[in-house]
Image 1 (cartoon, rainbow, N blue to C red):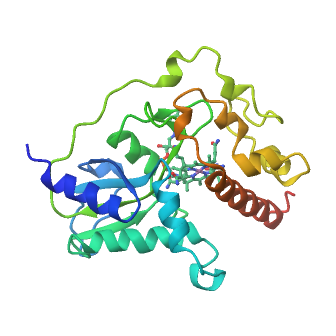
Image 2: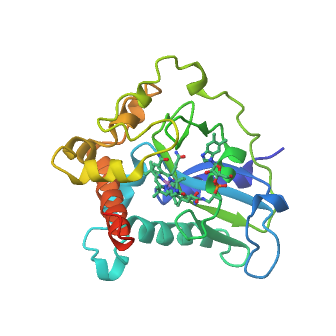
Length: 245
Ligand code: B12
């Protein structure tokens, strides 16, 4: 089985600042949309961030951008630019098209796709955990191909949370927003927007940072701050719009 085509997709994604996050051959129940000319997608390669590469590439590219040209969502804007560029290396539409994790609602079921592609598992916090990258990885989109090419078999390593006895992620949040029944979003965002939220905003979610799995992949402060600041602003705006703030 030659992985030559898959390896060339890995290289193309890496050149634009993204990491390939595994791949699979979709079946009808996976909810992968058809290609623009109606053909089914034969191979889907997931793309995201692992380690600091994506944030470095994004930070360099956005220099000089304003809300007028990035639509107020600079990381999503950057993701569209670079995934379109990567797709064009494989002929572009309709043979290879990007699908984005942030397009919605309704959103594409990226977590379902992620579980088919890599050894990721639900963590007690909600986001998926990876045996190598811990909680420090995410998805920006995917490349959908008409061509059926060989991809590596799914990595079957088990969930690291299954053998984590102390579960510090569940007891570290200063406002107990993680109860085990899902995130209490209003409590979380109120805390981050308030006078004691600085640590979470500047360095990232404390519960997530308490995870002992491979903390060397922890987001650096500039990336943590970018994500937490935009998360807080967008969620607060949504609560205000719904009269819940
Ligand atoms: C909407 C959304 C949110 C909403 C959720 C609102 C809601 N109540 O649904 C809000 C704004 C709250 C949110 C918050 C966060 N999110 Co969010 N979110 C999404 C988004 C855009 C869509 C999710 C969705 O509705 N999918 C549609 C359903 C049908 O898709 P699905 O994949 O099939 O969903 C399955 C999984 O969710 C799975 N699943 C979920 N939990 C569990 C648990 C178990 C036990 C099992 C078996 C399965 C399972 O079951 C679902 C049904 O099949 C996804 C991106 C995406 N496209 O998936 C990111 C995404 C899930 N979010 C992500 C992240 C990182 C976060 C935050 C940590 C952000 C932050 N603060 O930094 C928080 C943490 C939330 C938490 N602790 O739970 C990441 C997760 C990455 C990862 N490592 O897994 C994603 C994938 C985005 C990305 N760029 O990578 N998010």
